[in-house]
Amino acid sequence: MDSNLARLISDYQVNVRAAVELMRQSGIPLPATNTDWAATDIPQRGELKGGVAYFKHGYGCAVRLPAGTVDFDFGEHGEIYGFDAWRLVGFAGPRLPEYGFVSEASFNECFKAEVAAGSLVYSGYILYYIADAA
Image (cartoon, rainbow, N blue to C red; front, side, top):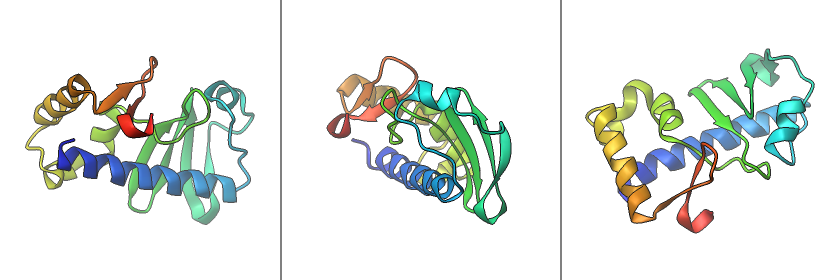
């Protein structure tokens, strides 16, 4: 896999894990499935421990961590390590060049090439997973 893409995915996943842990510490129950999450009865917007803002949506959540906002969806079985191109670009934001991508277009080309190479596996609904972790 492209080392720049691998680093971006890893950083994104580290921040998703931090967001989920903060949600857990704040008393938000973690779902067994993405549909369980959609049915979770919590306010759509709120604050987690430490005053960290969150926005619950569909199968996921956007959490405004001190390091930046991370937006993620829970997987079919509650997985938290899935991603898509849009979420990765949003997470990187203006730091995309720091990950070795001169533009969103160059990132998208790399992402598509890794899907074609089999390094990234499509879940069938929005999310992709690293082939070894799928």
